[in-house]
Image 1 (cartoon, rainbow, N blue to C red):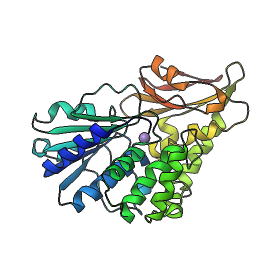
Image 2 (image 1 turned 30 degrees about the vertical axis):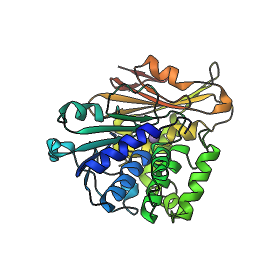
Image 3 (image 1 turned 180 degrees about the vertical axis):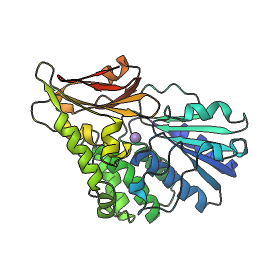
Length: 320
Ligand SMILES: [Mn+2]
């Protein structure tokens, strides 16, 4: 974290103090960072007597089943007018923008994010694109307020840090990230349990889907792009889910001689998701490509969505 959030942290602390009912929001297609963030927040807020719900348009990712008993509720199942405060954590433009206008004026709103180019307004915005994860920012908040980090909180924050740094492999693994991880381990976060649940726990359906993705991968020697596609049919054929696609772009990006990776995958409602990855030493800013397609993200990890379907041809594929 490079910014000084003393004022925003003070506002967040005040909002929490004055609120009885708090709504946490996790982004669509929840990953380890958004989930770890809202779970850590829920654990803390509940411990100080608040009534807390977690809203998300999708259920808790199944890889977290062994690490938590909390659940995610669909926003439509909650009385959105009943909360004193709402805190959205990570990639807030994936879902929270739909909830914000529905919340009553009395509801205080807070955004905690590490994605650049966020265009939502809220009563407090804690946004730092140099942070590895939303969980890193929440850790900084807890430590600024001398909030005790329990074993569960430590585990949840560690899930986000590990998830967004690719187990300390990506360029966002700063010395601060390692200090935080060390402190979280001292507080009882089980590194091996998280790795086992989230990274080392690959179902056969996931591996089969990866097999299809790797089989189809192509390298463009002109620009160093390694790319592949996954259709809805591929996903169904392996009895996999869209959750299983998450790591494909990062793995392709490890192929020697490539500069960046792109995975195009068909989602529901005629949407194609593009996931882009690169590494610091490769010197490519993938967020520039994501911007061309109306998406966004970081220099080394970005995404976009376009309408259409993937049509596979003899020479490759096209979007129709
Ligand atoms: Mn994140």
